Length: 228
Picture (cartoon, rainbow, N blue to C red):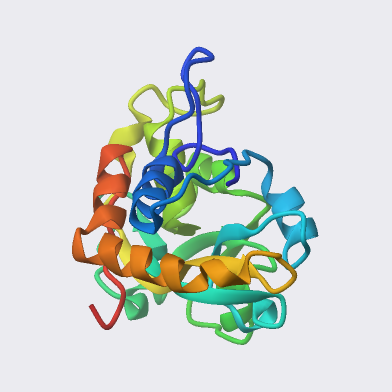
C-alpha cells in the first residue's frame, strides 16, 4: 500500500490509518488469513509491480498492467472530476466550453482534449498548483483526480498562496471519467493458490459496501462505478 493521505497516513506518528488500511482489514478477514502489510511509495509499487517483491497490490485497472498481475476483483471506483470555481455553472463536461480550465499537462484529460479548441487550456504541473489557481480565481475550473482533490481539501497541512477562506471557493464536482480500483496478485507471486480466497473476500466487501464506507471514514466522496 502506498503512503498518502487519505489512503495510508499517520497523525502525530500514531498508528497507520486510511482508506486502504480499512479495506485491507476487510479483505484479510474475508480471506481468513493474516497478511503482511507493506507501506511504501507509489513509484516503488510501480517498480516492483508484477515481480515477486509484492504479492497483492491495490491499483487501477488498465490494460498496460494485465501482463503483470491478475485482476482479482473490483473494490470500487475513483474519478477524474471537474471542479468549478464557486458560482461558475458547470453541470456536465460540455459546460466547460468557453471556460478557462486547468489540468495536469500530459495527463489523461490533456491527451483526450489535445485537439479540442472549445475551452481555454491552462496546463499545470501538479494538483496543488491547480487548487491554488482555482481558489484564487485564476481559472474557471480544474480537472483533478478525486483522490487528490479530497486529500488536499481535507488535509490540515499549510497551503501557501491560498486565500484564508479557500475551501469556500470550490463548486460542486462533475465526473469526467471513472477508474476501477482492484485488488491484484502478481503473476510472479508464489501465492497463486490464494486467488480463490481473495475473490471470495472481494465479493464479501462489495456486499458490505466496505469500499464506500472506507472512503466516507476518511473524508472522501464515494463515486459509484458507471454500471453500479
